[in-house]
Length: 122
Image (cartoon, rainbow, N blue to C red; front, side):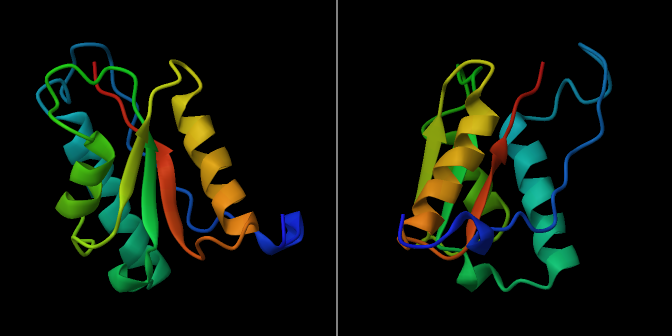
């Protein structure tokens, strides 16, 4: 890593409400939930969407969601279509791996600003 671990920060961590299995959020897609969070992160942080270098999202239950749920989150959140996105499926560790991968990319100076986290809905 070219940058030190001290140079990498988590800013504006946020999550959706925790519901119950088959509850009020059951008809809301994981990508819609993720996009809602990303929009709010951008709003609270004052970060311009154009400054985001990439989106990395962990997602296990991908069946029926279409291609690259991470990209869907970015586009639905209003990020430019030029922002690349990667979806990670590492079962229970998917969201954490997304954050680790983001930190590694920032540490290697491949990116400066990455939206990272996990999405699911059951």
